[in-house]
Image (cartoon, rainbow, N blue to C red):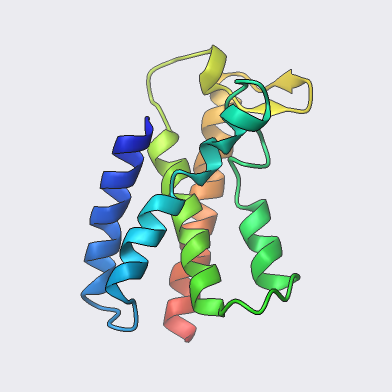
Amino acid sequence: MNFKYHFLISLLIFHLLWIPIPELKYIELWIFAFLTTLPDIDLKIDQGSHRNFLTHSIIIPILWIFWIDSGIGLWFRMCFLLTISIHLLLDISFKKKGGSYTIKVLKWRLNYKGSTIYLSLNSILGVFIFILWIMLW
């Protein structure tokens, strides 16, 4: 999915989140919607190779939430986890594809099924952690 659709769909999702969570400021809705496009930075970093296993996973947000004390509030970091999870969810395709759809792990690529499972597990786990945090918050 391209930048425009990642941005618009995530903006809609964050607007829906804004209703039950009034602590979410309106400007943050736009910031998080923009951050949803962040995993595609691998297109620029890795000479056009799309879907790197680090940028298309929740590994970096999880490290930022639990192990790196950056001085940025937990609320923002948890929403960042949700933005990455939304991106991964929107990247899942149920039509058999190859090439840029597949996840690149170092010098190898996962096949279509492995890539779909990888994206699915990461997105579901990220959303689950966010919902669990909201419930316990």
